[in-house]
Image (cartoon, rainbow over the protein chains, first blue to last red):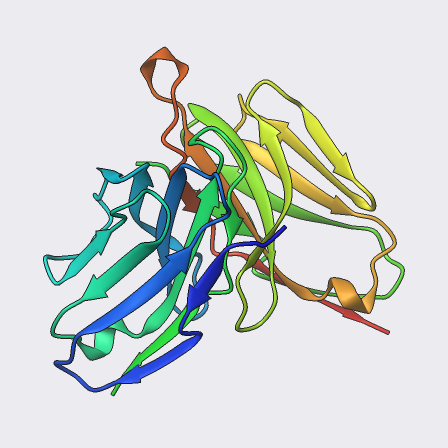
Length: 113
Length: 117
């Protein structure tokens, strides 16, 4: 079956612009996670959805970051007023529920000039 | 706060060698531990998941062990091949009171493995 997909694969934007990153989880997976990975580092947790609700958003770095999952499937990570420090690989993962193996998408490489 | 450390940071071996990658974590209250592989510029591929009640898991040439009390896991790769070259990451999820987990992964920084022909 289809895995987790993320679009776009690459996004280049200018400082101060708004960006949206999309994640399509594996069908039927109720848990969805966003992580951010800087070069040479392990991924860091941003936010976790169980169904439509954000069960844990403790990893969002500040109020410029926001994520939604309105129908309990596709999720969008939104970044306002982007800064150069936001440049990173943004990874999405899904699992059947919060107790099971997580499957990752290919990521979106965000570059803020 | 959970901290995950992976040693070594990088490893270069000739093809055919057996090798061990190490992962340690500071808080033993984990729900499970997962090993991943990441190719340059790509997402993560899950290799093995070990529940906190398990001691090891095997998949093909890979064997992962878990010693929760000492806060350690190892990933053993048998008969390494050039195609095994990648970054290997371990990650743990926390066990909360009542045995629940939110699945939030805490990662180590990874071990960069190079297998040369």
